Image (cartoon, rainbow, N blue to C red):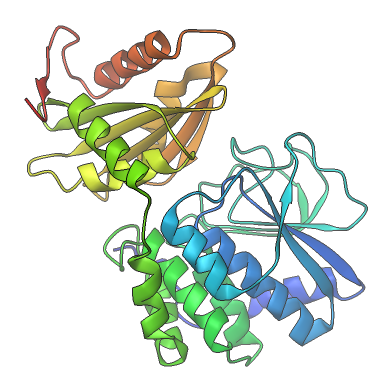
Length: 343
C-alpha cells in the first residue's frame, strides 16, 4: 500500500477546482473510451457535484461501448443518462472535463494539447499544460477517490446511488483495497460505506452473463500458455474491448503466476491487458513495450492496457508478434515452448 500523504480533505485542489468552474454554465464530462466502473462512477459523481455546488449543467459522455456485464449493471443501477459518442474527434462548444483519463492517452476521446477546462485522473501523469484545472495523482488508486475528496471538501453527503457508484469504482480499481491502494483510497472507501446500497453492490458484482461469455472463457483457457510464472492468452474475436481485462483478472489467480498478458481482437484493433501480482511491478511499461510505436498503452503498477491497430495485418500473426515481445521483455527465452493451461 502507498500512503500518498493524504487521507481526507484536499483544500488546495478543491479551491483550484472552484476557481476554474466559477464562471461556467455548462460542462461536457468525457470519460475514457469503453469506460470502466471507476470512470463511470467518478464522471456521474462529478456531474452531481457540479450541479449541487455551483448549479452547473453537465452531461457525461464516452466513446466505444460498455460491454462487461457488471459495468452494464452499474450504469443501469445509477440510472444516469450517458451519451455514447461516435468514433472520431469530439466536437463540442461546451467546456470539457476529462475524468479518469488525460488528453492524448491511448483511450482518450481528445488529443494531447486539447484545451480542456478540467482534467481529473489517477493514472501516470502525461504532463503538459492541457487544462485550466489539472488534478492528476498517480499514487491514488481510483479517480472515484479523488471525486469523493471533493465531495467531502464541499461538505456534501452523496446520495445512495452516487455513494454506491464511487464505492464500487474504488473497490474494482483497487481490487477491494488490495492493489495500488493509498491511504486516501482507504479513507474514501470507509467514508462512503455508511451511504452504500450493499444489496446493489452484490447484484452488480453478480450480474448475469450470456452463454457466449462462457464459450469465450473456455476458448481463453484453451489458448492460454504458461511460461515460468507468466501466462499469455489470445482470445481471438472479443465481443467487447474489456473482455481481455476480465479474463486477465481471472488468470492472475492461477497459482504461481506473476504476470498475465491477455489479447483479443475487437473491430480493427488488437486489445491488450496486462496484470502483475507484485505491487512494485510496472505493468504500464510492459504494455507500452508490447504495443510498440504503432500502438498506445497506459496503466499503473499492477494493471495496464493497450491497443494496436491491425492496419490490414492478419490478427493471428500480429498477436503472435506481440506475444514474443511480451516474452522477451519479461525475460522468458523465446524458444520456451510454454505449457498449455488446459492440456
